[in-house]
Figure 1 (cartoon, rainbow, N blue to C red):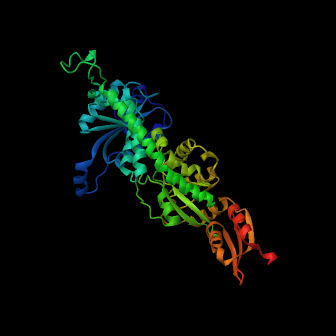
Figure 2: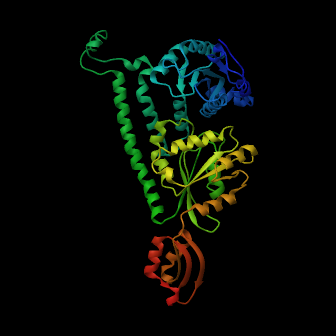
Figure 3: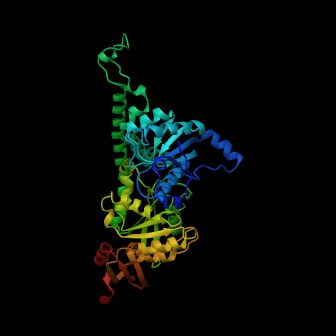
Amino acid sequence: MTYMRYEPEDLAVGDYDLEERQALRRVVGLSTELEDITEVEYRQLRLERVVLVGVWAGGTAADAENSLQELKLLAETAGSQVLEGLIQRRDRPDPATYIGSGKAVELRDIVAASGADTVICDGELTPGQLRQLEEVVKVKVIDRTALILDIFAQHAKSREGKAQVELAQLQYLLPRLRGWGGNLSRQVGGRAAGGVGIGGRGPGETKIELDRRRIRERMAKLRRQIKEMSTARQTMRHRRQAREVPGVAIAGYTNAGKSSLLNRLTGAGVLVEDALFATLDPTVRRARTPEGRLFTLADTVGFVRHLPHQLVEAFRSTLEEVADADLILHVVDGSHPDPESQIAAVREVLAEIEGARDIPEIIVVNKADAADPVVLTRLTMKERHSIVVSARTGSGIGELMAMIERELPRLDHEVRMLVPYDRGDLVARAHSEGEVLSLEHTGDGTILHARVFADLYAELDRVAKPVETV
């Protein structure tokens, strides 16, 4: 077996020989570092020791390395200790064992030598690939999709979030039941049960069919529960829309700083952690523009490359916050080695949400304090409707708020009316929903000069008098 330590610049010089092109290559710097003895003792109790394996089927070497580096962060977020990172250069993943039968044997030797107990593949494996690779390497094998689902299961806190994650996990598990152990294919009853003996004959169904039926029943129940729980979210959303409060959705790659930005803009106090998918449950908070206009900010679940389709389906009710927004703040990690790929991955998921494509978008390049100025310049040149900020230091936040002000739906009507004192609620609505230009208290009522939406204008027109007729 051939190992190669390589740097990205080495790969640009010439082509690999055939042997090198087909070899598993070590990716430098993927071993999880332990900081102190207490951390060592803690990790020995709970961490799985994993080897990462990826197939480099297209793109540049840097793309392949970035993908495996991201897999490393996902594995560590799930609570694993990464021992090795390997890349196999192939035209396409092997349909039987993902990396090929010969390389699977070599991978088995690496697993045995390193003492790993899990192999994580950087892609979604078919049930057959999962089963056959597991049979060769003799340890547990999981794919990128299962890893992301596990992280979501760990981080879901609300009842709705837990139900959504469980539904996604069951959708993933259903076609893979046969790959998780031979005991699932035992049959009870029927002519094929002749070897079972007395009491084992008669009509029956295989255990795997029982499990599948139970999973389908559980999935149907979860869908009903999610639909019921989403009613409250829809009611709140419709109430905001009826009051014509504009909505802004914060979307972006995981760990790009969405929650930090929400906290900076609204003081929401949402959990902020340097980890992938640290927060899953959406948070909606009120905020005001520099001119005093009220709007709502909704923090959504983070995206990632090859986000499992099951999660997009399960979290559709949550992602509707994006579809119903008037503006999307697309947060990008400016310090990431490849921010353009993050932007593309997020837009790919947004394209699956009906109506999201037509919503105005501001690219918010975050972490300016840690980013390369050359990268920031490149991003702002490529994405014209963008702004550079730092949610940690507050740099650029004022300019972002002014940009939000310009992009929000315009207030349709400017009014100057005498509002009776017994309808002070209309003045309060003008403060909360519109833009109050001036107030003057007289003996007959309050002279309100404001810009408001159509529904409030209609209410004012019904109970108030234009100032010119007073």
